Every structure is written in structure tokens, then in C-alpha cells.
Length: 56
Image (cartoon, rainbow, N blue to C red; front, side, top):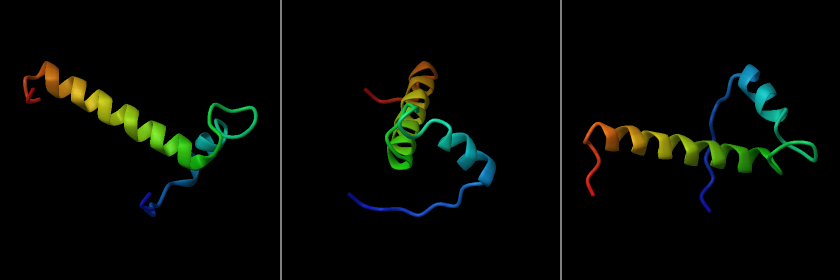
């Protein structure tokens, strides 16, 4: 799996960390970021479909 490097504001990282770990929704930061990317792309696809911009 390719690795990427991104800069994230501390405020977002702090918020992310609240959802990671034994008591969180995600096992680690990578899983949280991947889930967020998937959800964002799905939402963008839905918007494009509603606007007639998504090819079948």
C-alpha cells in the first residue's frame, strides 16, 4: 500500500485522536484517515450524481 505524507493542523489531529484507540471508533490514525477519505469521496459521488455530472 502506498504511503503519503500530509500536514494536518494540530486542532484536527487532536480531534482525530479522540476517535482513535481502545475507546475510539478506529484502531489507529491511518484507519481513521482512510475511512474519512472513503466517506468524503462517496459524498462527492452522490453530489455529482444528483447534479448529473457522474457518468454511469
